Image 1 (tube, rainbow, N blue to C red):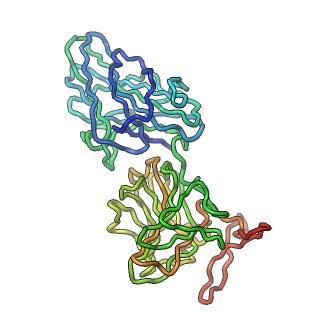
Image 2 (tube, one colour):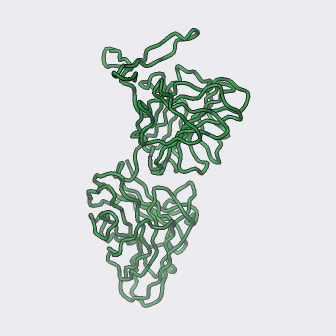
Image 3 (cartoon, rainbow, N blue to C red):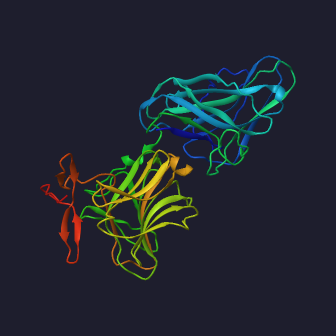
Length: 427
C-alpha cells in the first residue's frame, strides 16, 4: 500500500537541529508538516544563488507526525512539487535528501534517500515536476520516529549571475498536483512512499470492537449515546443534539482496507427528519462518505458528501435482513459501499473512483443520529470490523461459510446471532 504525504504550510511538529543533506547554502528556515492530509495556504520558498560553481541550495524541510507503529519503510519514493527557475540559464534541477529521526531527536535512524539530484531543469513558468519512483534504502522505523524531507535545487550554471529557484508548497485543492500542471498555487505537492503500510496511520480494518463489556478505547460517547448492556451493543438515539459514538482517533486510513459494522436495529417511523448514519471522513469539514437510514420512509442512502450533502446519492429500500451489515471498502483506486446478510457474502451497492481525500491518513468514523424530536427507538450497532464467533458455519463442499441463525419475529425471519453464557453474562 502506498503512503502519501503532502508538503503542507502547517507548522512542523518538530524540527531537527541539523540539516542532513549536503547543501552549499542551507540558510533556508522554511519548515512545515509533512502531512497525511493536504493543509495550509499556498506558499513559496524562493532562494537565489550567485555562485559560479555548481551549488546545492536548500529551500525547505518537511517533518512528519510520529510513526504509529514499528516496521520497515522500503521500496521507492515518488514526488511532485511546484517549481520555477527565474531564467533557463540557471540550469536548476531538483535536489532532495530524506531520512528518519529517532523520535523527537537530532539522531538519524536511517537515511532513505541520500542527496538525490534530478536530471530535468526547472521550468521558467511554474509547473509541477518530480519523479515516478526512485529506490530508497530500507529503514527500520520505530513508533515515534519521524520522516524528514529536505527539498531544494542544484544550480548547474557556471556564472555569477543571480538566479532564483522557487518551490511551491501548501494548498488544499481536492486534486493533487501532477507533472506539467500549472496549478501550483491550488493543487498540493506531495511525496509518496511505495511501502510504509500502517506505519504512519492505522488501516480502518483495525478499528475492532464487539462492545462486550462496554465501548473500548477506540471510541468515545458524545451527546448522550449509551451502551445496551442487555445485548452488549451500542445504542444511538436520534435527538436534536446529534448524539453519537465517535472514534477517539483521527488517524485511520481506508486505502486498500475495509470498515464494516453490524446494524442490528434502526429507529422506527416518524414524520420528522429522523435518521441514523455511519460516517467516515477527515475532521469535521463537511467532506465524508456515509450510510444514512431515513426512518420516515425506510430508505438507506449511500452518500459521497461535499459540504455535508450528496445531491445524487444511491438510494435503497432498506431491508433489515439483506442490509444487516454495512461496509466501506477501498481497493485499487475504487471506493465501494456494500451490504451483507451475514458479513460473509457482500453485495456492492455503489462504487466510484476513490476521491483524493480518502487517501488521507487522518480519517475518523462516527455513528450518529438526529431527530427534530426523539425517535421511538435507538439505532443499535455491534461488531465493528469483527464477525461474532457465535455465528454458525455451514460446509458448502469446499469451504465453511458463516450462516446466522434465523428467528421468526411474528412477521418475518430475522437473522440473530447465538449467545453464550460466560458464567456471569451472556455474550
